[in-house]
Image 1 (cartoon, rainbow, N blue to C red):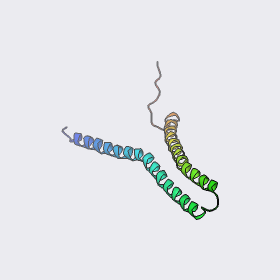
Image 2: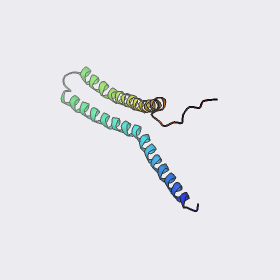
Image 3: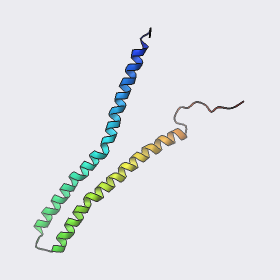
Image 4: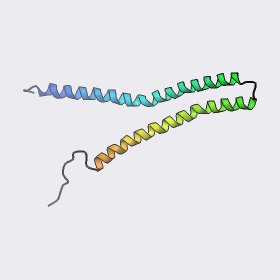
Length: 115
């Protein structure tokens, strides 16, 4: 510790750990944020359906039932679609990392050869 290297390495380690913690917390928040967006959009869909139903209430009771059934299913469809997209992005990132490792883009030590 005569050269003061310990403070440098410890400081670098702490700053990298803090950065990694922030990035991992940001990655963990994408799914709840996208789910919240789907719920918010579902409220707009239901509101629009309600307004359309009240404006055309005299036409048909079956049409009104169809409006609300599709409006209620829209939220489920949006959540399933958002979940599939998030899983696809996550698996794509894992595949990209695996291909970088397998294709030799990452620095590695040379293979050992026995004499």
